[in-house]
Image (tube, rainbow, N blue to C red):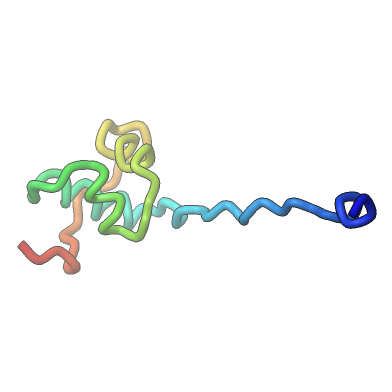
Length: 77
């Protein structure tokens, strides 16, 4: 029994990373925020499990302030 405990290892599951934020995603975020009733968490989920903090940064102009909104074809009202 002691030998079993000595060799036992606990492995943490790998952390899932969200998709990389690109100018195209930022444009979609801006459009979805302006023209749909979705909140930030819903936009993050719709765009592929994106981190909601990144959505907030785009909306508040901290990231990609120069990017114009672009219609997201995946949105069905």
